[in-house]
Image: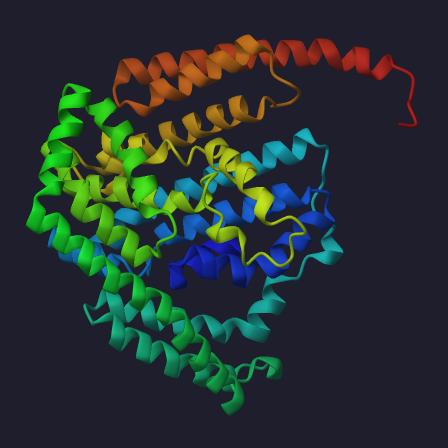
Length: 418
């Protein structure tokens, strides 16, 4: 999770993230007992989350600020809490799945010491700090990227670990790979220009907005569901920059007209555009997973994993709780903390219900209570929060009582060789 999040904070590309981190994370997950399909699904979902990670927050964030007329710093600050909640949800889902399968983590002797790693390669974090600082100072992404390239070459030569030296051959290979990678984005952006021209000159955007509003009877939650489907379909196979431009031009005005805050509307459409990478029908992101013996078939499991970590519900939470984006009239420290706590509790409740496991397999009534509680915690309000908390406590007490009743019985059972 951490490797995918940190890589995504720089690349902003789910495919590149999988190709970079999947080569060692997938074998590592398989070594502790996770199935190849589930390991591939975890990597795909985690890498997709990298598209919403600050500080780079994907190359599309440059256009994000251009559409909204706000600074890069504002967008980065707004993305911090949603990105952290996304990965917290994913960690909860994976932890429950591992407990369900009876798996254990790596032993201490197989875990590298943080102090030793930082001493050997800690200076390689310097380019990341330079890129983030340059962007926060208001400089252009091109200027920040140039400083990042120069700084990583310098850092590689002053790092005690000699295996990371950027020799002329490695520099040439890196530049070659970067040029090849930019071809995909260049072609996509050229095609996007045609789409934007068609949308603006034919008025198809206004027609689409009118049809969606008419079909949903101007009901916000129904509009959000329809826009979600449109974003996923329009974004399939597109890189981050291209998919954001498409959904921002075509469907984000619909949400803004429906009363959604502009920043929340753009987060909503981009988030579901990014999630098109883990949909059942699109195999784009599974292709570069060489460490998985069945990378293509892991996609349906990837969508289930994304659902379990509440990925599909996050954009709805941001629309109804703009305080998580540091937006709104009543934004304050208390309101932000309150939203984060309720979101984490709701995430864990939904993760338990999706995994159908907590301390043991959940009862259908417990599962239903966890689902209802998670839904109630999405909508802000004291009554809904209290009701959701009461349902979670009720389900938790029921589960604990069943677990305590089962524990003595399990202790008295004869040992099995199976």
